[in-house]
Image (cartoon, rainbow, N blue to C red; front, side, top):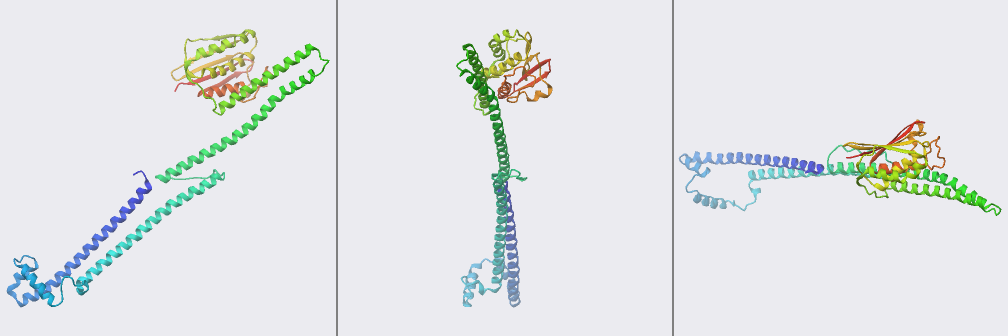
Length: 411
C-alpha cells in the first residue's frame, strides 16, 4: 500500500480491533470460569445432600452429572416434570435464576463497556487522524494564499511520506516554478525596456541623418550631383536600419523559441565552405587569405541555414577587424565526445575587460574601427549557437589576435 496515511490509519484500526478482540476473549473466559465454578459449587452441594441420604446411589448420581448414565433421557423427562410442578421450565425468564442471571448481567456489562471503549477509541483516533490531515491541508492553503499575494518566502516542510507529502513536494515545486516564472517575467520586462531604449538609440542616429539629408535635398538650388550623393547616403542609412531590424527580429524570435530549427546530421565542413564562398568578394576586396585544415567530412547535428548565419557573422567580424592583406585561420577538432570549430583572426584584438561583454546586444568595443556597427551580430551568433546546445567562447589579445571557439557536444 503506497498511501502511507491510509496505511498508518489501517494499522491503528487493526491494533484497536486486536485489543478489543483480546478484551472480549478474556471477558468470555472469565465468564465461563465463574459459571463453571458456580456450577460445581451448586451441583456439588446437591450431590453431597443426595449421597448423604442415599449412599448407595453415589455412583449413579455421578453418572448423571457426567452424562454417562444409560437411561438419562428417561430421568431428564421426569426431571422436567418435577421442575414444572415448581414453575421452572425452559421459557422462564433468566431473572428467576439468581446465580445464572448474575453471571449473564456481569457478562453483558463487560461487553457493553468494551464496545463503549472501542467506540471512544475509534472516534478519538479518527478525530486525531483527520485533524492532522486537515491541519496540513490548512497549512498548504495558507501557503497558497501567500504565494498568490506574491510572498515566495513561504517554507513548506514535509519530512514524512505519503500522499500529503507528495502534495507538499509538488506544491513546493509549483512555488519554485511560479517564482522562477515571475522572476523571468520581471527580467524579461526589464530586458524589453532596455532593448527598446537601445533600439531607439540605435535608430535615432540614422533617422536623424536621413532627416537632415532630406531637408538639404528640399533646397531647390542644390546641384544634382549633391542630391545624388545625399540619396546615396540615405540609402546607406536605410540599409543599416534594415540590417539592424532584421537581426533584432531574429534574436527576438530565437529568445522567444518562435523558430523551429531544422537540425539534422550534416557535414559541417560543407556548411563552412559555402559561407567562405559567399564572402569571396569581401575577402578579395580586403586582400585577405583563409588558412584552414580543410578535412573531408565532420558530421555534426545542426541547422545548416542558421549555422551559416552564425559563422557568417564571425567571419565578417574577423575580416572587418583585420588589416588588409591579413589572414584568417579556420580549424577543426573532432573527438568522440565533441567537435570544435575555431575561427581566428590576427587583427586589432579586444581589450581583456571588454571580452565578457562582446556578446551583449548593442555592445561595441571602444577601439573598434567599424563605427557604423550596431553591435547585434555577435549577440545573434551566440543565440544561434546556444540554440544548437553548443558553446561559444572568445579569447583575444589587443593588437594580436581574436579567437572564437564553437564546441558541439555529441551526447
